[in-house]
Length: 68
Image (cartoon, rainbow, N blue to C red):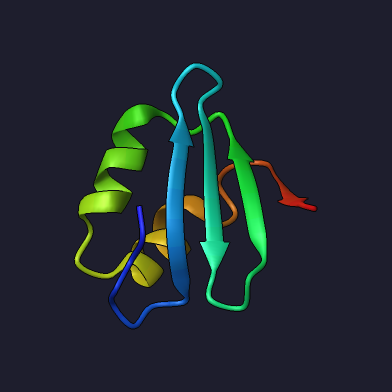
């Protein structure tokens, strides 16, 4: 899903089977967060401010790795 608003989030993808959330930032870096419930992904996609939601509900709450 491409994100047209002015947050640092460029794209959000979700692998439901693996409960893995992929977040691409405007600088091109992409991160994979593991153990993310589907309802958190849906709330992220629906959030008015993707950046604020990411900071409050995802960053620091789920383990992640930078995708090469």
